[in-house]
Image 1 (tube, helix red, strand yellow):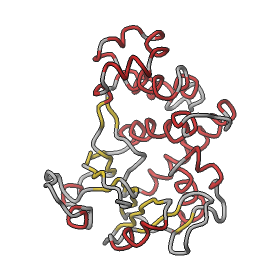
Image 2: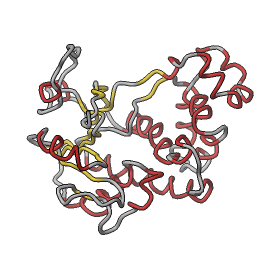
Image 3: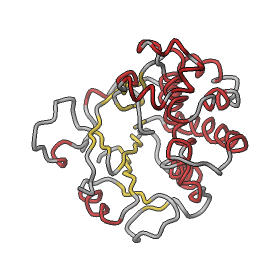
Image 4: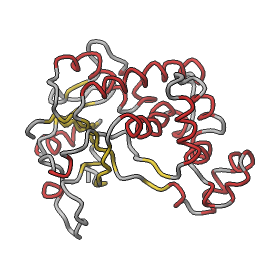
Length: 267
């Protein structure tokens, strides 16, 4: 794609040819052995051994430490996943669509006046009440007002899914430039752009984001460690970033929200 480098994450060899056919750069995550056709995050200055906890962030770290300086300025640098893809336009998907006809292949003209593209937000108030009661008993006890749907903010959702108090403890470790603003963000919003996906054409902004993100997560490691159980807690560092990323780019960059497609390349 002209004036861009777009990466697609995968962990299975059987999606490599599909990613290549879509003209994205295939990224193999973690320390598992996969074929040589992937760009890997387990060489050079890397944290691939943490992929179980960090998910796609291990590649962000690798890119930042090993390739970022040599990448050209003023190109769109973006990331997708083998199950989540950027859409070419805002049109509604038709029944029986073909991914190759819908996936982002060229930079849309609507992006001209923006620096950063984030996925359309998901509204966390959509969870069924019985699931909220089942999964969020402790969070509800700490925040009884969440019995009302309008009060189920990002902070409540995170407590419910990833451990009561975890978000507060992590926020306390943030730098002073972001601590209060991020606290207000998670307590006043009921939606966020998901999946740790973004596309940005300001290389300096991406670098600044990584300079804040990874020292913060390193501090969080000392508090939460790696002896974690259950999907919601094992990947706690990826989930913290998932809330922090849209906050940070909306605070520091001109953002356009854009549709993504959920389409598993393994099916």
